[in-house]
Image 1 (cartoon, rainbow, N blue to C red):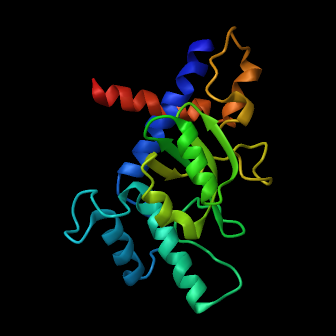
Image 2 (cartoon, helix red, strand yellow):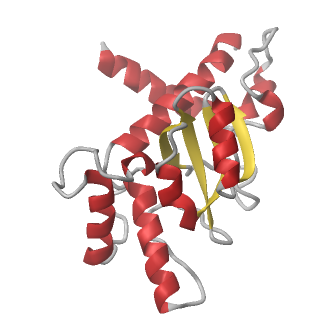
Length: 208
């Protein structure tokens, strides 16, 4: 189990980059946003040529950009409840859970995200998780300390009706285990290890 625990940050990084770099919504069955909102998000992601991932806010990923523009439209028209079209987006009090990968060390990225109002911050390896104000998504995308980010959709059965689960706990910041952990100690990652390792396995197989 020690090897699996050590591989968890790598698996998380691979998953975040996979979700952030596809340029596609998470589910084809998602509610379709207005054409104008989608066009704005695509331009932020792809740039004016509508190709590649070289738009001014590309590092935020298409899902978060769609969420941002939908939230802007919601604020302009007014309303009681914001219901994003992005499946699995767990929005509360104008914040959305994210998993961000640092370009280098996690410390500078965490500090930058804290400046933008990140709540419930936690770190594992180079990944910084927390709840970011939706209005700060464009500012986050321009951070030099950021490599990539994805909307955090993970849930566990234990806290399905509770607060947003963050991947790692602050006390587990990137410290390798000194002894083999029993199975019940593994869920430091919020119960995501089996899923993440499955994703990592797929990624490794596709590289062979």
